Image (cartoon, rainbow, N blue to C red; front, side, top):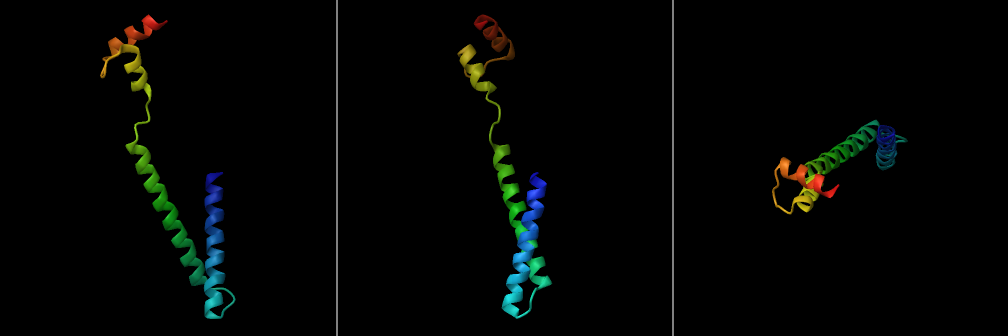
Length: 90
């Protein structure tokens, strides 16, 4: 679904670019404007994707360490301490 939306956005950007540049130059449609619109939109979307991917990789996705600290009461518990704390809670 996301790929379909991506392709539709690129097609719409190409159409807008083609008709927009065509309007400025006096033509009905400009292939150069269409290519420019599609390439510019592709570059922006890929750049945003790379930016958000880098942000996601920086963030710690695991919340397990929070629960491990709650169970053991220690800042950096070992795996054995975490398992012992879980057994106590059951």
